[in-house]
Amino acid sequence: METNATFPPPTGPAPTSAPSATPAPTRMRRERSAGHIVAIVIGCLLFFPALGMTAGGGGALIAQAVATDDDGYFEFTLDRISTDGVAIAATDLRFDGDAEAADWLLDWLDVDVRLRVDGARTTEDVFVGIARSDDVERFLSGTAYSEIVEVDGRSPFYETFDGVRQVESPLTQDFWTETASGAGEQELVWEARPGRWSVVVMNADGSPAVAADVEVGLRSGALTPIAVTLLVVGGVALIGSIVLIVVGARGRLVTDGPEAGALSDDGPGVAGPGPGDPLDPPSPESAVQLDEEVRTPAGVA
Image 1 (spheres, helix red, strand yellow):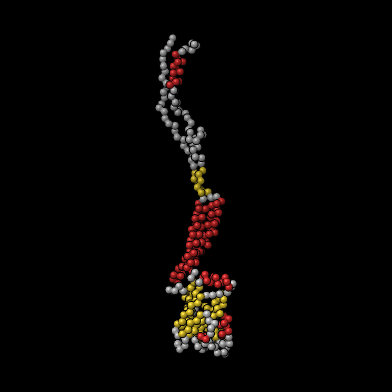
Image 2 (image 1 turned 135 degrees about the horizontal axis):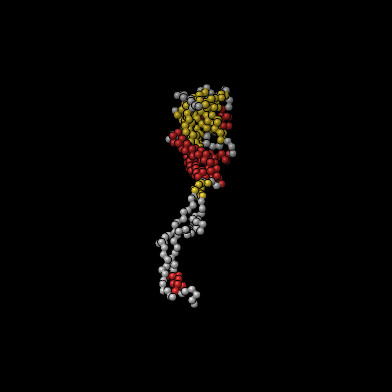
């Protein structure tokens, strides 16, 4: 008996998309490598020298702004100097060492010494001069004079030399490098040079009993460039050291967990079918083959 029947393809619930796989939980942490430790060490080694350079440069600029006069001199005033002899000498101006190196260094530093001397004897002109120490010693040899050997605060201390020889007027001598003389306040400016130098204060006529008020000024043309260089270089090094310390201390951010895309055991980003998932409907060819099998009884050729 031939049965003419067709069977519709099986149906099921409407297809739905596969559920998304949930990534495994991850944990973020920081770790420091050998490079980070080295950065911390280098930053610490740089920090304090850089801080000192920055503070030194800034301090020098501030001091120059508030502690110098209009001509850029740092001023120091001594208590009144006096002696019963014919002269008062200071022989501590020493710039010894290799002559060529000292000359180059002093040229670069551009050091100027300013002396302002006001004679305390109202009836006598005052004299102030700078010369080589050897020349000054020969000039004052055998005379009574005082030498300043120490200054405590503003107070000078003297070593006194006895003598009976009368000294000639210092104005008649030609060994002086710089001089100033006259009534009232006298000003002498001397550019520092290598060697041993002496400063001498006298009465202009060479008479004994000398007294004067003295103000010493020092100025360096290299102070501002040095201060600016220290401030800039120290500031850059200070910022760099802080960056190295912070970067080294923070380390790098790492993630603990599965590699990106490993969402299931079936492969990256692929979820296998689970229980209860709907089957795909059969294709039309499968439905025709099933209809032919039904039409032809088993065992019939």
